[in-house]
Image 1 (cartoon, rainbow, N blue to C red):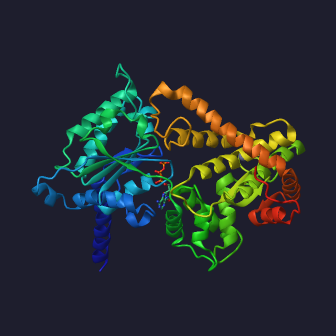
Image 2 (tube, protein in one colour):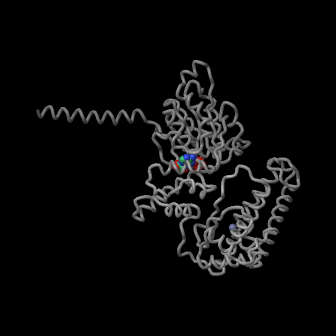
Image 3 (spheres, rainbow, N blue to C red):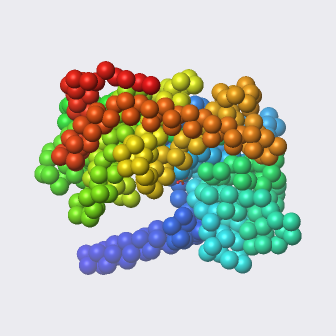
Length: 479
Ligand SMILES: Nc1ncnc2c1ncn2[C@@H]1O[C@H](COP(=O)(O)OP(=O)(O)OP(=O)(O)O)[C@@H](O)[C@H]1O
Ligand SMILES: [Zn+2]
């Protein structure tokens, strides 16, 4: 009996050893990981179901997924497939997620690397790292190689072609040409915020020849993303994801994921069984403006400037009916001394010239209020002015909405840059004058909003509306 037991134990030990050993043999692959660690090769369980609001992009990737899953079929037909895809667009919009879902959908090995590591961490060995990476990916095909921040290695080469980065890029080009996607099901996905920086050689047919834009999610997409990220979270019945989607205009999937998580943490801290609207609202504010700086020291004068600045935004927005303001606040958060939360009525795909000009007026409302009241201006309008300039520039160069022509101006062509500059100034000056005039005529309203704001530290859209409506002289004078 004892012998049987000993035999069993020995058997079990060798079994586990073999399992472990086998595992090591099967996945000896290590690749430079995104967090600076060597990551084991993995086959992600992420699928397209985890990616919300990108239906059209997923549709566009279906043929590649089908090819990866049925390589034989396509091979027999002599069909060629793209080797490289570029996902481009703002950060946090799901490029990495989508790439790992591609691997999940095709049961492929996933090799995530970051372009910046090749130039920062693997100095002198970038090229050989690239070679090793492709070698491993081919060996374990089907594989998906994901190069985040591909612009770090893939931006335009220098003339001498000698730098570390250029050698790494050259090796990448060699590898892209070297493998035949019909022999090995290897797909290389690069991600970047700036497609325009990439070397043309990288984008040539046979290399990264498919470019897919991944932008900010619209209203419906935001709702879907919130649904994905609250799937396994208990919610109060009155939590309305559609309403949350409306409140999170301009946010990315990464923001929304973080909001869902923050809300869950808040609910736990408050000893709740379910996540309620309060938690979501607070999470939204936290994500927007960073953690509340409760003890921040803001001198009184500064507080007054901030109050007038925010009230200026709110008043113009209300009078021009641009957005339903959901909140203004003078409690400092993150880097902001005060802030406005906007709640757009809907996502517009089209904006008229009037709407764009009105939006510029709202942005200029902060600066104009400062000038009107203090006869001096602060540095607090930096972001507002940046956004205003961008809107004006787009109107002129892309939408043909200015006096210098119903045409498009190419950003590369410097022939018209002086003219465009003058026109930008003209449009902004016009909006600013109008904004200042509206505030001047409604100064009493501005003062009232500021007084209430100083009292309460923050006002919601309803309260602002009430102040404006209840004011006897509120004849809604718009210049
Ligand atoms: N469309 C989406 N659906 C569901 N979750 C999303 C979506 N987009 C982003 N997320 C969430 O945000 C996180 C971060 O997104 P991800 O890293 O994929 O963005 P990215 O575009 O690669 O950003 P970066 O350019 O900064 O690398 C994801 O892990 C996911 O939780
Ligand atoms: Zn402002």
